[in-house]
Length: 490
Image 1: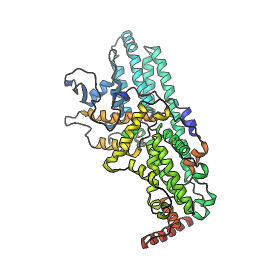
Image 2 (image 1 turned 120 degrees about the vertical axis):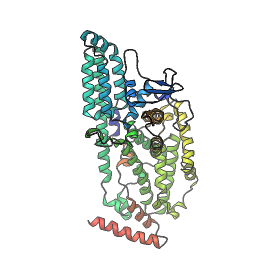
Image 3 (image 1 turned 90 degrees about the vertical axis):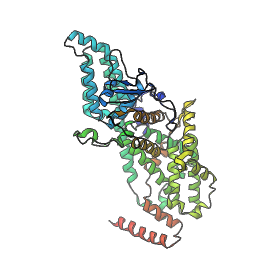
Image 4 (image 1 turned 180 degrees about the horizontal axis):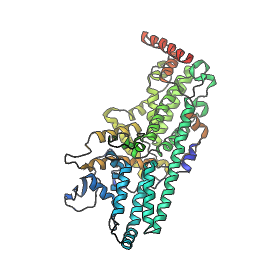
């Protein structure tokens, strides 16, 4: 399926209004963050504040704080932060059922007329809360119990306010369209992966590689290829739910017997995106190791160096790092005769930018620059920021692991939740940029479906390009030949 179809059916929510509540960079932790407008006292019921910022609270008080009343609506940064991180403590259905119960109970007086008036007064705020939930965390509603709660809430609001009931219907339709688009995307990814997994005989040996196209026969323009890689990155980023970052390390409550939420770890799209990074690295290594002639291998090397540089200029750091990773794989790095034909100055500069030392300090500086450019952008191209994704996941993981979720008094550590939300909210802004470049379907198809070498096949192709240099490599080649031959005959 054409990736274009996925986007045409998605109604993405506008730029998250709470994004501005957090630091513009996930790597500056010195800002005066998450100001929260509450009374100045240090304790407010079961919730504690410091310098007017919420720092902790009991889980029950935090849930109560999410529920709107006639004269109260929670701060939108609070709504996002709690909906995002509450899944560390309870699953979304449990939170949804508690919220709906509290909404209903606060209207119940025993007087039908009074109940109707109360519902009418608060209904628009309840709709607003549920709209923020469905638009920012739509995947929570793949659970049929969540959809049932929405339906029940809609019936409840219909008793007092027809306008709000209609708004609920429209919200539900938008949600259904979003979930349908997600289903189509996941089907398309599965189809692409199945297509890429087919391994024609032409791939298995270098001698027959004339039967296989190479990337330079599809496109010899590094800028165009970098643009198409950016299309794939933004397409796949747009389907990652912000909650997947939290659910990647969320722990299942052993008391929870419901299978539907935890049946999968609910990180499918995040995992598919990491798999894309790995595929691109192996594709780069395959394209370099495949050619029989040294000059063709050198040309492929030079081409990918240029593509990597264009990715850097665009702000596509994920493709940049995948390309560098592919070029640093041992089957490629050992091709000394091939590398000797290449001017590596540009590659050295790129490697320096993505150098992992000092916790990737060079990359983080470049990311801050790209983020600043996107904030003041006059065009969609200047808005593009595609982070090195594995490092983003690692940062969020260590933020979660390095700080307790609960304090010694049993309170939820809300300072930690603010910090998690700050990092994830920036991702939401990056995720929703529309790719400004023209699509080239032939290049896109090639990038996502052409078969690539396995690690063993890469090593063997490398040895066939430039023979073993020592006894260890000779033994390795002999073992690989035997192993691959055995696999073919099974």
